[in-house]
Image 1 (cartoon, helix red, strand yellow):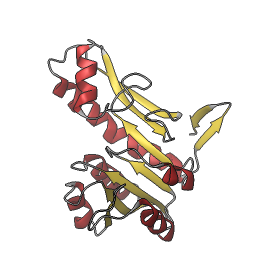
Image 2 (cartoon, rainbow, N blue to C red; image 1 turned 90 degrees about the vertical axis):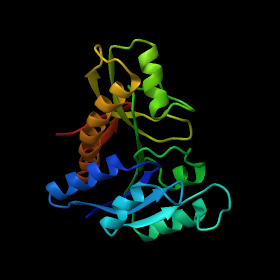
Image 3 (spheres, rainbow, N blue to C red; image 1 turned 30 degrees about the horizontal axis):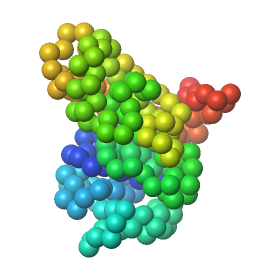
Image 4 (cartoon, rainbow, N blue to C red; image 1 turned 30 degrees about the vertical axis):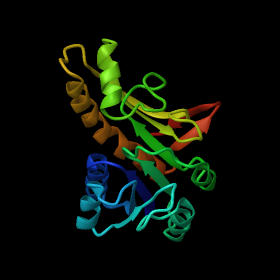
Length: 205
């Protein structure tokens, strides 16, 4: 069983897509915990329904929150193979990146390297894409390093947005792509079909 930890901040639609895909594929992938940046994260409801452990984590000391050092211990005890950032809005601290080098991925709601960086998340991204009159949007999955949205790109998928009327229209179309591409990439990791060669990332058939 390939074990993943999913980090979330919102309602957890990508978490649900991962769980649905895993069930359809015969449960080769197990979500062993869900980590949020607040106590009342809506995605925790999905985790609880599926009997998945949840942790709230913070960079500063707070009641009922884990420090990242404690979280790292828990992730190791759970034998986590891959950390998946699925709408997690906080920057991952260096200590976690160092402990799980090349084993943390993020899904970004734009075609990196455009529309990435600090503050570029959620509707902020789609608003920027809309205001630039971009004709094609999409989602990017990339490795996480110590700089926002900087890690090597693993996979991208695009969608035509030439006829959209609002940033929310873009968000809706991109989210559908996210729900397809993220489970696919996790599946490739579970099958050891993600290869870095000549400074590029390849997904094997």
